[in-house]
Length: 260
Image (cartoon, rainbow, N blue to C red; front, side, top):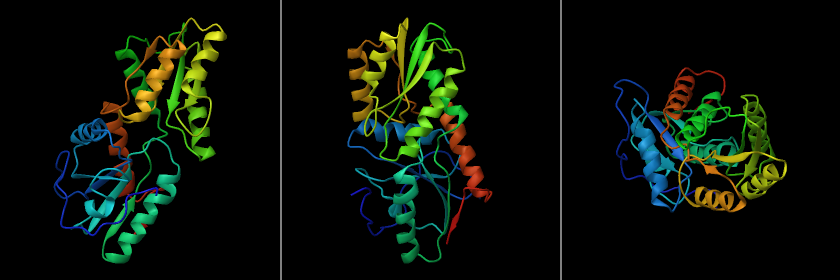
């Protein structure tokens, strides 16, 4: 099953983040993980958002989206996802339609995923800098690693981001995928080293720690990567993107359909 079952709500779920009286509440929907570090990272990110925020999860964690929407008359729902794929195109709209059938008076604007966005590349460079890698270092090849998707369109977006990032001066930038597509991070690292890269740094395009982040780190280091940076987590750039996506949805601009 691709998302948590719809569970009848038992009243509002406690808010996270800051407060913004008079603003439409934001419900931020993360993937969810059995690893408690993931939920803690999502909470740390949302705590920096200066809005009335509720969190929801697609799987593994509570609250579900129907629970998080409990007690609201209107909301902006944003997927805390870095690529547009099955969850954002199918899962979340399906859940929102189920909620709409039970709560016909609820008015929801559904916003865009976090990525792609130029600020996310800035966040990746922030994490690399924290690991000792200078942005655009011509002696460093970078492996940009996403979780991977069965949706080829999502993987193609990551490949395009890698090509765009290469223009920043790196020795090379290669896309890799932790699952569902190739090359794997280890394969990409090995290929760059064979091609003569002086050193290889791996940049996880992942929101939070967990199974994929651990798998990426382990495989990349075993393949010879010099550096594996941290996940994006509560980077300031993500906060800025999240607020921008919210404002776009509230404003009813392109990509912010109303479900009511």
